[in-house]
Image 1 (cartoon, rainbow, N blue to C red):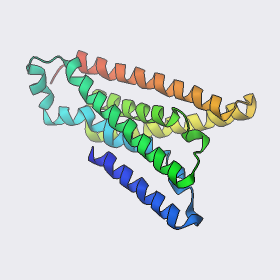
Image 2 (cartoon, rainbow, N blue to C red):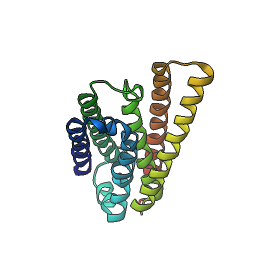
Image 3 (cartoon, rainbow, N blue to C red):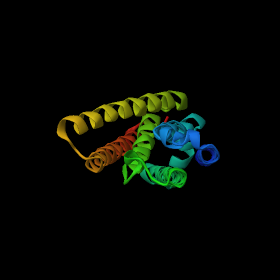
Length: 195
C-alpha cells in the first residue's frame, strides 16, 4: 500500500516538473509503461510469497478459513489498489498534458496493471520466494510489453487497425491472461502442500 502511494507521489512530482518546465512535457506519459512493472514487482510478487516465507499462511489455514477464502481478499485488495493507483496516475498525466496518448485511453492501462499484478501473484504462488517472484514478474511483464508493442506496431502497419481497435483487442487479451494467471495462482495455493 505504501509503495503504491509512493508511486502516485513520484508521478505527481513528474507532473509538477512538466508544469514548471514545459520543455520536458511528456515525461510522465513516457514513463507510464513502467507502472505495470512496478505493480507486478512490488505489489503482486510479495503478495503470497511474503506469507509463505514468514509462515503466516499455516496459521491462517489452521483456522476455520479455506485457502480460497484466504486468497480472495488478498488478491481483491491488491487489485483495487492497482486500479486506483493506475487511475490516479492516468489522471495526473491527463492534468499535465490535457490529453492522453492512445495507449493510455480506455481500459488498456487498467488491464495492464491487473495483468502485471496477476503475473506477480502467479509467480509468488509458484515459487514461494519473494525475490525469485519479483525477478520473474519483472522479466515476464517486460517481455510481454515488448511483444505487445511489436504486435501493436505490426497490426497497425499491416492490417491498418485504428488505435482504438488495437487498444480494445490488447485490453481484452491482457484481461484474459490476467484471469488465467489468477486461476493458476489459485490452483497452486489450493492444491499444494502447506509446508
